Length: 394
Image (cartoon, rainbow, N blue to C red):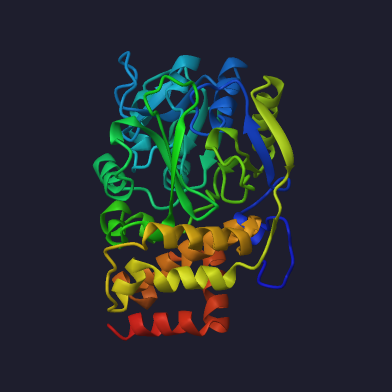
């Protein structure tokens, strides 16, 4: 595990999960309409085209198979057998999706023996638990890093209405919490341009109370940000962000290959010229102090210890200054990913401690997360105070 002063530039297994090779940067190729550059879609399409799999389980947008664009934030799991169907899965869906709902269809399809399952950590864990019941000869799992999905599509849209009121919700194509401490909202400005427009708003300017409804309870009890059971995992927090061009559809993502099946998946996309690999993911800068500062100021954490919920975010000009300063002096690349990972794990540990008590919380936390919690308890007085304050409520 890498800590402040250790100086490691590359991702470590103790925090990011098993790696068959170092975490690498990459971009997708020949995938129009992707939220990013199409890394995940490119891998899935290449495997289907090559006959490596017979079908792909992925998350489409509800209604987009009816000849229209559908609602991008409304997830619908599908069993895709054609390239066109796989392409329906482009883009990040910001709400919880019933990914396993299509497995009954799969069990009834005798012609599907080789499957690619695409999903976030919670979906992958559930799939792994029952994949032996599906009578499949070959299984591949393509995962994404994930944190803080909304309970429903309506909650995701309400988050955007309240947080980014200047952009009409029906024009939004996707959004991400990015490495420059801003929310990037990708949207169609109606000009007819082939390139999307972007609105970027500092985290610090968002309404403080949106977290209450915009983050699912299950996400507050999740410790699998890294999607540890997937064969390949695609994310972006450990990737560099070009200050001159931070558009999602022109930025690097990270690719973590966990085993030989994952290597086969990557090679399929390379052979089909749907993926381009860059250098290994690296980083610099300390992450612990900023992770702990984020935990301490988090509105949900403040509620746990009897603090006041801040309904309003910072004024925009102050938020822009804060985001620019944090981007300039804060952790970058892999170190930024460590910051994001530690923040979410510490906050979620406090949530479990608050809701279920110490004994059950400790049983829920996997070992790698427990090691992170233990380190902060040993070295960080503000975190110890938060833990003791929550424990004293019971």
